[in-house]
Length: 482
Image (cartoon, rainbow, N blue to C red):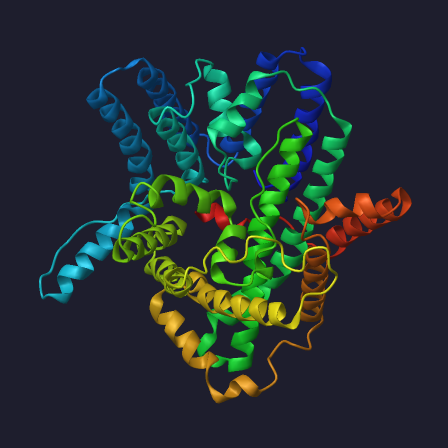
């Protein structure tokens, strides 16, 4: 079920009314309803995948209980590795089997040996990369004795399968989200209205900004050889805003939806395109995934402890695996490799922790030096997105060849079309509002603090009208494929 669909527009109010007005005021009843609703939400795509998420969840639920009981170091390690094997095994099979099989065959072909390894017609379960990581982090935290495992299986299944963040995050930690299922939630008007504001901004980013950019991104990336360098540059910029609007828009809708039911999710995006270097970008982009890789991969590998050589190795491992997490294609691997290269100079001069504050904090305008830093960071991120978006490495190289041709100084194609002008206008609206709200948990949060209710509600109604008039209907979210 898509957030930007009529199905969800019917589903959410029904669950909301049942949750607050019909079922008994008990946490067990609330959790039971949320579990049923979440499985209906997920099963809307394909009911067969419900068995997969239930199996993954129950494995980690029972492993958590046995990890707590076990006093044997070897036994506890075996239990942890069962959790790792099940979660990553499911992920590897459904997402990466054909990729590795085809790459294996191609590798032997290069050396003159012909191999035959059949590909399988595997349907990728929606959101498998997200819920396997979320469930696995629970087992690891129990193993590390950072938390006591739950014996409430309904709460645990809700933690893994809660519908707002089930298919595209944020990847919530058990230590933060699971305790929220243990207690009775009482309706909080301020929290609910803030959730609606965040959902409104998320829908604007998705259906108005991202999906209007998408129509031109498809045209430009599918015909890179026949277009001018300036048009290819325009396509890369449009994709930068498409993927930002699409994914951060999903996160805003997810976080806002959770607030309607009394839950608090961690922030997943903090205006990443206002970053002053690539390290700051990764502290602001897809925060839950970046922290997951930091805590469960980078630090266990040794992090920045030890020699510089080992630290550099760890950086490349994390970025390359992060790239592969996004998709079974060498383009994603190379995209991760590029970001490791971008990050490396900062690490070598100990500048990767330089910008921990918000740019131009408590100021309306940034300094020229900050503007230049943000522009340079946005440029290298945008160039890297070309590999992320391309169907294969060959197409990406063709795109770059056309991009850096003399025709980059010409006027881009499509630039005078009405829909292109609309897309660029709303990108401008997004940038301005993101800038004004950059110090808040979400962009529209500051409106309620600075302006009167009539002004705020006029703005909200205007946003709703824009969504209905200019929004593209029921386009899937990019990160559903991951």
